[in-house]
Length: 233
Image (cartoon, rainbow, N blue to C red):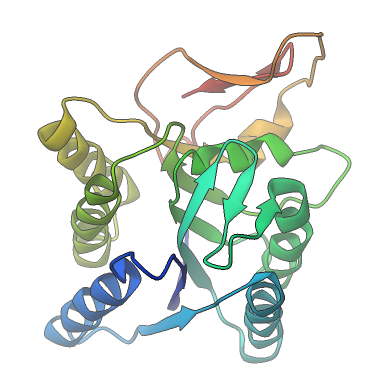
């Protein structure tokens, strides 16, 4: 994983705390203190039109300027997709082609961090016949308390920016969640490993199941789809 830019895209309800602003300020402070050449952009979107336009601008910049971005989303969500501040629903299947364009222009280097309830369900759009929408993603497979989503990603990025070690960053995220609520629902998915597995279909409900509560950035995290079941790594 390589990156030289972090985009924090937020679309929350009026009554919500601007958690994306808080994270952006923390990351800018961390970058300044460590003299790192890393750009942090906070982008607030209101509705689906502005959200998709923002992703298109990121895609264009990636193509023209050689950006290698991390895309962090601060948005409400559920198993079926995102719920924007406007109340509009963006299904994962609608989001996937927008992300695929960015991922293509970054040569399969787009990394997603999702402060989104059930955000890991984005992985269900992976399809061996379609361009991958990301290199990898981190997100919870269940609804999460807002405090866990915010407080967990702060140590995640602190560790990632200091050590550049994805495994340690993921462990910091999971440990913070465990400290707060006693368990962690955060997963790491790698598109490459997911698409290397055989896709099987059955009539069961698509769901995430648990085989192990650990995933490794170094091993790219094994994900398989069997009987329309995405397995937790």
